[in-house]
Length: 253
Image (tube, rainbow, N blue to C red; front, side, top):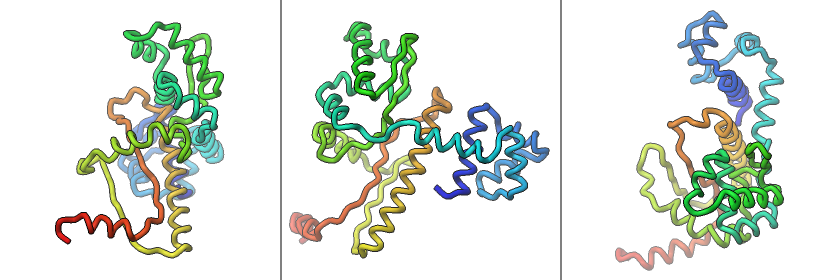
């Protein structure tokens, strides 16, 4: 994420947290709402305007950026080997963890399992997840995840072996033709230097995505406009023989 985008996202996050609308910010700045929206859409912000916005929000730029950084890195983003093995070995724990990671409340979880499992079983499962350091479960039914629901699954690891085939099949079971879907496969020869450059771009995109997901997880939790997305971010070298095999199977050759 560029510094310009990072600053604007930090401002947006503080506005969401405080429930401040563009119209309210515009009033504090003594300008039109259209002008405020233009600042964000065109990503054009002078230092003087930024200073005025910080005053309107009652925070320094350093505070806004610190909030953004702490939110993006508040959760661990990798599973330990023990955690992966436990989740792969018990489908109930697997489902329970990802419900917590998706911000389900205790009451929502209890309701979800009520027809099949007693509440005591749900509580026991939450305690097991807490022992694994996957979640924090308090006696007042407050739950929060310690490991991100988007934590990296180790290729070849326990979770990968159990769920990768199913998840990959479901992900690609689409024509990717809807307005909120996107898929583009690019193939060609690139140098090792450009491959490293490409990897860096993917890593920057992943950082931006983590920040976006972290913000979404704590803002507008009950928004009906939200949908659960699967986002694949990867590339790898392939042998040209793969294309040859596909060509050999084609009825046109």
